[in-house]
Image (cartoon, rainbow, N blue to C red; front, side):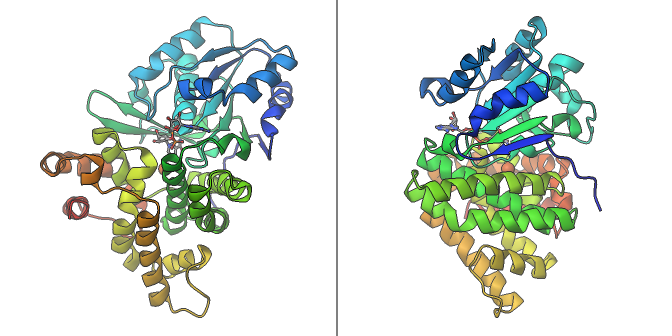
Length: 385
Ligand SMILES: NC(=O)c1ccc[n+]([C@@H]2O[C@H](COP(=O)([O-])OP(=O)(O)OC[C@H]3O[C@@H](n4cnc5c(N)ncnc54)[C@H](O)[C@@H]3O)[C@@H](O)[C@H]2O)c1
Ligand SMILES: [Fe+2]
């Protein structure tokens, strides 16, 4: 059995953002800095967090200058602020981008160095400043993963940084914070979490613990994606997506992601496609390529997501899985590369570098079928057809 790593405290439920005070007490912290983004402040999504801290007379500062899909440069200002302040913990509030930014800031502010120094295959063990993660999207699972992903702007590489050092000390999973997530982001983040669950399940690093989390995540996420997309105020769908996303994060953090994520990061870094959206663009094509390497496990995914029955054969279940993943992209209006505005000639020109970066990230090695460099290029080319 693998070593399992989780946050020390995970508080779950409607309005649980209020429990931040309780967590601060348990961690013996009283001077937090909130790392967030401008949307959280402008749309006042951060209000319940601020109200709770103010009620308990906790002094805090807010840094809201994080960027979506953070770059190494974008976290420098926050690192300086933390180094020069007297904060004893970080509250990361927002989607995966502010949470990943905060994880990186926590390590750089306490251990020094540059983000490149922490890039996989380096495994970072020692934690930095304690971090409480409060996600406002139901997607990345970053609140319960031992990863952060920071883009190196010098070569457009999304660097995967790995290790217990990146596991938040505590997480608060409050689905009420996701009611305001726009339609497109609801779809993209939900597909990201579904991809985490499927990839954790079929990964060569899967184990009984991660399999159990992954199957539960698929059962919660899949039937609720279209519901939350069509009605953002659907309480049950929002709640199930949120818990599903955290479970999927726990699953892949204790197993791994695989080829979809390996190929997705270069698309995100080169063309600024949001992370979940580039996963969605890849998921049907990569699943089709990978099924022969794990026919039984993929058929179990089809059953967990509710589109195959226990009487269906392995082959029929896998056919249904592919049909569903393609239909899901149609229903969620996932654009093609071209519709997103990426010119085919430019995409083809960068394919070789993207394939090299995908392999270097390590994720494709966990796939049921490990593609060669040439096969990766063919898979990328399929996205342009
Ligand atoms: N660390 C991990 O384990 C892990 C796993 C997967 C992805 N990621 C990373 O996470 C990042 C993506 O995170 P994300 O998909 O959550 O998106 P995001 O954090 O970039 O947010 C997307 C947009 O949605 C807005 N938003 C977020 N919550 C909102 C809310 N409640 N209401 C209204 N608007 C809201 C944000 O302001 C932003 O404009 C990428 O950088 C990706 O690489 C990390
Ligand atoms: Fe992801």
